Length: 123
Length: 241
Image 1: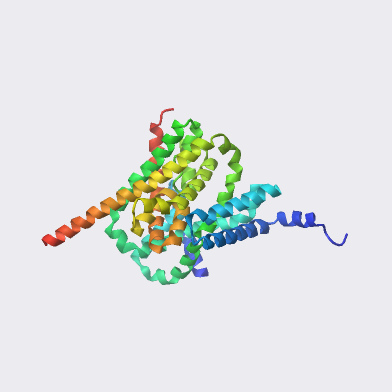
Image 2: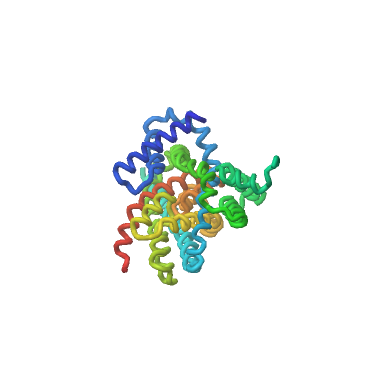
């Protein structure tokens, strides 16, 4: 477990350094995730070492959002005045985003699959 | 006086990070029990229940958020390594990822654009202030990216953080029914759409449903973070003043 945390924190730190040094809008942990993914593609000997602890950590991912979520109380008064446009915009746009992503992705996947099937038949 | 009074004990405890940390874990354990009891109904989202509980307790006891966060920051800190850890489930889906790269990327661009344009458009039509409209633009992506983007385009980063949390909860609560309604059965697509629209909170929900959905939610969250960081400042430059 400690070894996994050390590895994750090293990747996060490298991500932070790159983000800061190159003035990237992408935060360190996200860069760290991309770097670790790249590393695993290149060399997956790391996988059995970190797999157990990472899956345990991700099981409780929801917990980690709670402290930031409680921050909602700080902005209660600001949201009060504009709650209606904010609520409608958040709900409708979240639904539209889920639906659009899902429908477009599925449609293109089906197209790709049927194209592959057709070329298979011709071959 | 030999025995300190109850309120003295409280004053002593409240000054240490112990209370904020303990309260966060207790609220979450309780919220998760309810979630389990409901057989993981998305309506009983544990983040939503734990946040509601803690806000109630802090308001009733008159505890400022900053005092609470002094303790809760130890939990908050783990978001960093947990984000890095998302690379593992994603790597495990590598073969599937390779087959579907193009559909996923096009779906991402479509969903990401719709998320930004519809949020900004609806809030603007309903008469929200310019600051609020701009703070809404990056609401579908993970908090650190969203706050950075909001700052860049003239929104309020701290308001954006709240809107991001609300978006995540709305997505986590409604994704299951919405995707059922659209008859989307493939866990790759279900997870990916949830991650694109509802970042980490949506991803956490996806992992509770299915490992593959979780992995693709993580992918959607990461990709939309990068895309939004690049796209929203460009779109905002076109917005009429």
